[in-house]
Length: 101
Image (cartoon, rainbow, N blue to C red):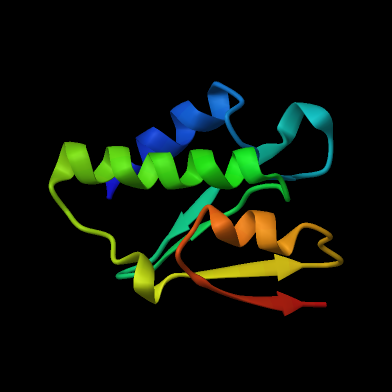
């Protein structure tokens, strides 16, 4: 899973997609783009089809590097807040989605 974390870091550094900032002052903030658990991964990005596409690319790259398969059929896209372009976002992923307000 270290390979996935490194790929995510490179994607954020390249401004392919953004996570969210945690911390008080701008000097001590931390960018969180993903969280890894035993058999689950959370990826955080903006409501932008391009960012969704890049997150899927990271998963494809991870598969190519590690030969580990991520089954997207078990994946969920969780939308937080009001999202105008739900269809555009879900077209990039073959996943279920739900809103969380």
